[in-house]
Every structure is written in C-alpha cells, then in structure tokens.
Image (tube, rainbow, N blue to C red; front, side, top):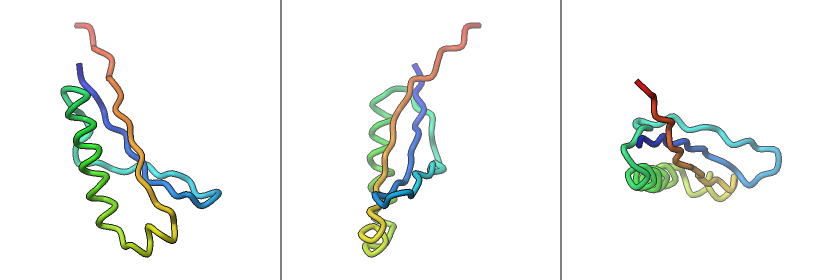
Length: 73
C-alpha cells in the first residue's frame, strides 16, 4: 500500500483559511512512514516560524495520511 501526506497550515483567527503546504516528499510506503514524516515536518515548520507569528495568528499545522488506491494492471 502507498500513502499520500496532505498538510495544511491554519489559524485560529476567524475567517482565516487553512492553506495547503507544499511538501518535499508526499508519497510513502506505509502509514507509519507517512505520519512519522508528517509530525517531524510539522515540528520543523512551526519552529521555523517566529514565536510572534504563531502566537498572533494562532498558527497550527494539521495533516493526514491517506491510502492511495492500488492501480490494477
């Protein structure tokens, strides 16, 4: 099975939309690899933002890993 990672940066401020994050890697061989990368990349993203930005915007990262359908050959 293959999994795809989909990640968003969001804000708790009303009417601010979540924006999908471009990823350097988004396909994984299993769920474990996908969520491990998702948590690690999320942490790196937040720590690369300023404390002021995160606090003022209420910024947070959300992500999910979705199994991709198998292609029948």
